[in-house]
View 1 (cartoon, rainbow, N blue to C red):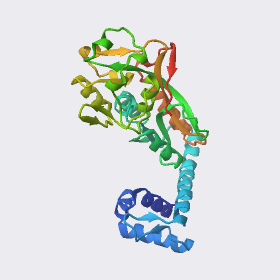
View 2: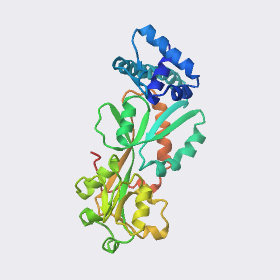
View 3: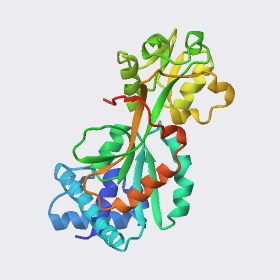
View 4: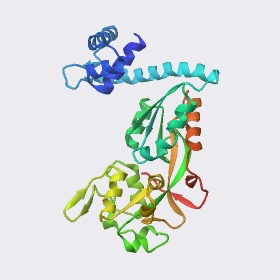
Amino acid sequence: MTLQQIEYIVALDQHRSFSKAASVCHVSQPSLSAAIAKLEDELGVKIFDRSRQPVIPTDIGQGIILQGRRMLAEAANLLQVVSEHQKKVQGAIRVGVIPTLAPYLLPLFLKDFAGKYPDVSLSIRENTTEQLLDQLHRNEIDAAILATPLNDPGLKEELLFYEDFAAYAPHEPQILNKQYLLSEEIEPDKLLLLEEGHCMRTQIENLCALQRAASHSLQNITYEVGSLETLKRLVENHVGITILPQLALLDLNEEQMQYVRFFQAPAPVREISLVFRQVQAKYRLLSAFKNCILANLPSVLTRDREKRVLGIR
């Protein structure tokens, strides 16, 4: 049994295709297939059901693959222990980020991080909170930038910032006539939300005390929206009101900012943290990553004032 064989079965489990797994592992498909078959012969069990398309793990295979992921993580940790001892910031980190943060937060610090730490290989993947938490627990990523608190005893949360929510309502005079809003002043039938699966949807439902619904309807049109940018464009074209996090306001021009109204104190905010497993050998790398984010945040996010953190459950 070799770590290379373990890498192959983990890749095949992730991609469920011999050709894709071989491509990711930079080997030929016959070589990858033969190495997995040799491992199966050595263990005396079938790890994958090759009669299914896409290929899937057998029951015993699922347990072997799970242990394989742990083995690969521990192997990577050995290298990181050496790097930590030498006090070097080098190696590889895989970080997830939720879609309502990625387009606004990442451009603020990625160039700076790449310049400061040329010996670090950083891989970013964008996904929903639920999927990123699953990837964290499966050791497919090292950390994630998420809305918190998560109340998961297996994970550590290190605060990055608090982000205000604000209403964006270009065509709603009852909103624009106010300096600050109360949550009960938002009309639920005019509010456009992200589709189910986004934690920010739950936060807005908690803010406005809304009943859960699969989508937003206006006359004969139903919206199931996965992008804050789509929500902004919709409300600009006479379709309702939406709630945006503060970083999503940074690109608005002066005219668009006239249609933004913040909420009355205590300000409703979302708490954003860097989340990783409690046992973490890459702490020096993650600390450098966190500090680079903090160094590049706009000052509007660091104000200390009365606030209330909206839940994500």
